[in-house]
Amino acid sequence: MIYNYESTIRNHIVPHLGKYKVKSLTPHVLQQFINLKTREGYARQTLSIIIGILSKALNHAVYPYKYIKENPMHYVELMKDKKRKPTREELKIQTKENLRLINSSLDEEHPFYLPFHIGLHCGLRVGEVCGLEWKHINFEEMTLEVEQQLVAIKDENGKAQWQPRPPKSKAGYRTIPFGNTLAEMLKRIKKAQLENRLKYGEFYLQDPEHDYVCKKEKWRTLYAK
Image (cartoon, rainbow, N blue to C red; front, side, top):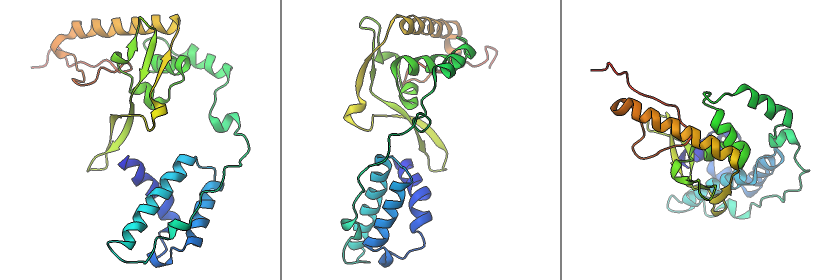
């Protein structure tokens, strides 16, 4: 979340509003800025984050810092979304031909093989696929539980670290059924992962807290001292 805020400030707020002094941020200036972002086609969630950041920052400018007497964001409204229906390209929906081409290019040894098929069969987002753990897979019910996603979080040195985070809303938590094709695929992958774990024993590198479904197999050299 902190990374999202920092990115929003750097990419949206500072380029447009960084030249203004706090007292020059009138409702008119701020409304024009929000209208511009709306016309540029940003998602409502992105616009809400921008508004939230500005509102909280200017609240602090009122109190305790007392730079201004009232928060100008109180008078800013988000335009109603009356845009045309987005095109396939805007939604980034792949054609059947592209999906067949991708599928034909991935064998079971390819690191994108399993993530691609989970996304294809279950409609998960990239972060949700990456955050999926074996405990979320129910082979008896043939369902998977979406309970987390992997998100890039910047550390104190500015380096992004991928960490599991809960879905952004209650709607993000969901149970998704899958068919025999994906079930057999998951069983083969899980068996292969277990075999590698047994084969390499103490040399097998694994996350002690998270048993991710989609992961690269890693191990230390058997000749390491």
